[in-house]
Image (cartoon, rainbow, N blue to C red; front, side, top):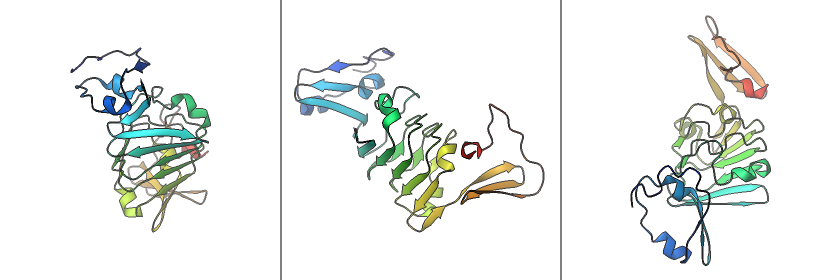
Length: 212
């Protein structure tokens, strides 16, 4: 029912006496997000979800997310693959996935490359925060489609990576003052326009900080 496992923040494991098929037929009410995000140990295997119709697997350094629909949102340390973060060097998001969750890959320092399908419409807050080594993103749509994706705050690592689209590379760019813009291509940072730049500090990094 609704709210059966609401606020069960310490819940980290669940076992079910039936099969995977039987578990997938169970109706889970609203406000049971903690239960939905767990690996459910069934009699014939585990149910490992990261969305109502999404699953994931991790093999040989590659995290693959497949299925249909949106990912669940997470906090920075409760993704189901968080314990493997130091070994994840590549993420493959397959066709059918429509969003990348809040904090999905937050502080995944080993991550170097990501494959993103053109069906993605939103990328949540801090999804790629602190991914210092992320350099390449393969996107299955056009530059125009990439620029239409809603990318929330805290994703500078993603914005500063080279995004390879079907019709060329998307340019890393943004604003750094009322009438100033910046762009990054081939290791060259260009600032153009007129007027003063914004001031930055330890808790308000320049948008290109993660390429230093």
